[in-house]
Length: 144
Image 1: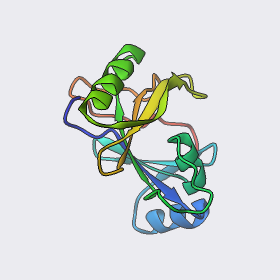
Image 2: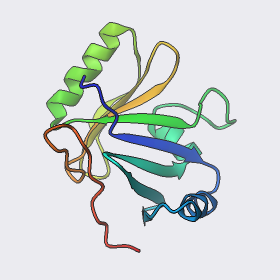
Image 3: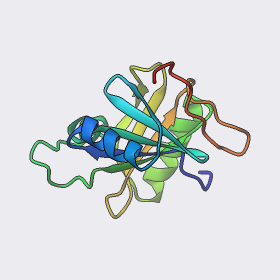
C-alpha cells in the first residue's frame, strides 16, 4: 500500500447544511448524486449521508452506533491492485467489512476496518485520475 490517502469521506446528517458550512469557509464543492466533492490539495474531501456511508462500508448504522462517520479511501490504478491490497490488509489483521465488487459508478471497491475499527475504502475509480505520485484529481462534474 502506498503511503497516501486519496479521499476522506465524512458521513453527515444534513448534506445541505454541511456543504453550506464548508463553502462559508471558502471551499468550493460540486454536488453529484447527493454527494459533495471538494478538491483539497492532492486529495478529495467528500460529504455524503452518514447512513449511506456506513452501509457502503458494509456496516449497519441504523442506530448511529459503532461507526465513527469517517472513511479514508486509497485509490488504485486497477481492480487487481484492489484485490491484492485487500488480501494484504486481511493478512495484516484487518477485518474485511465489504468484499471488493463492481460499483455503481463503474469502478471496483471493497472496504476494511483496521485493528482499531478505522474504515478504509480500497477502490479503483476510472473517473478519478491518479497522477504518477498518487495525487488524486476530482473531475469537473460540470455543476456549479
